[in-house]
Image (cartoon, rainbow, N blue to C red; front, top):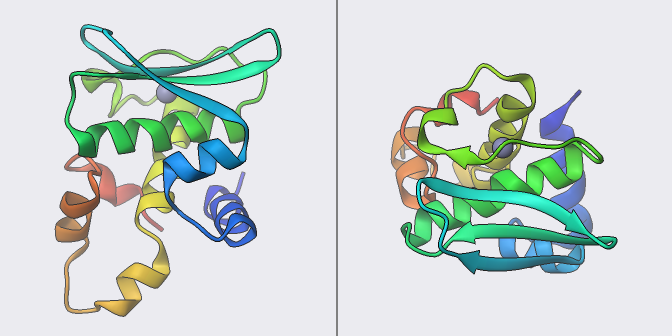
Length: 139
Ligand SMILES: [Zn+2]
């Protein structure tokens, strides 16, 4: 599966790489809740789609979580996906890795990196909320 191509197609079609705007455009309802150690999850209920995000994590992590769950909704239709937690970030589980790759490609588009070639990817990752270490998924 070419995740980078899927992200490009989606962001060009909707002209945004903002995960919240994309969720809205895809008719996914984003909600915030008390989730303990879980950062977020994606679920469907009566044909409606929901991304539930932990209300107590930082704004940057919330955006990352939204992007990750958006990845599940686009890439894993009909698959039951695990809750996103800090320790599952580096999971070798295939669908978790794919959702993380989707989020990284979404939040770190080539256009952004090319615009500021002297800025390191680590710094960009830090600015857009990609958790440290995950920027290596960027192709
Ligand atoms: Zn996930």
